[in-house]
Length: 245
Image 1 (cartoon, helix red, strand yellow):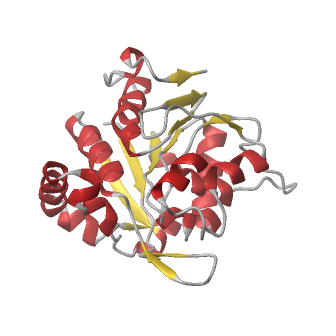
Image 2 (cartoon, one colour):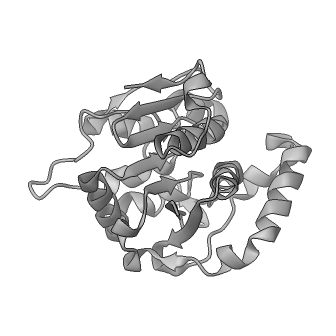
Image 3 (cartoon, rainbow, N blue to C red):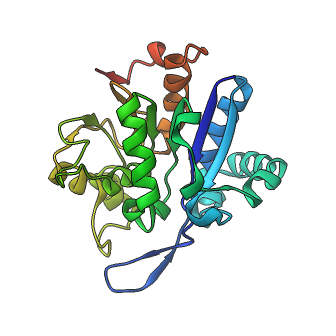
């Protein structure tokens, strides 16, 4: 059976540039949509967090004014159904990377609080990349890539094509002004071959085993791309707004 690992942030706030705390966590759509698709495709899906701490769902991602009441109802019902899985995630430090066919990292602002500097996250990603295992972060999940370093101190993902939540989207969201750093700018500064699609529209970039989605709307096509790469179906090749290597 195909086995996937979803790594979720354990953070419930995002520390702003002025030191204030912004309620955060895991963006519901990005986790729910992908987990739901993977499970429906027959995959075994484990969830892991730093320290095995139960994840917090970003309250903004459950706001009907932000995502719509129908989406909130769907997300809440799904999260309730898998409450036992969320209550007891694996400890990220204990994860054996070789057990998995893909490492998937949903966003929310949680990853820019913890995963971007997590040594266990770094180990899993370095091992996955070395073995050609699929690495699939979406939105702010790409912050996890920043945790990695080669033995010489260089960034393993320099020169790789990728997308992430864009600086422009961060500005439109209203969270850029007091951000300690912007994800897309930081990825570019680290040497990523960064690209983006239209703000808030689905956009996926595939570069070898690295598959990245730009924003919440990219969650479904990213999941489809992962499933297609694992020969489990998916609609990756039918999405006109996807960019592939």
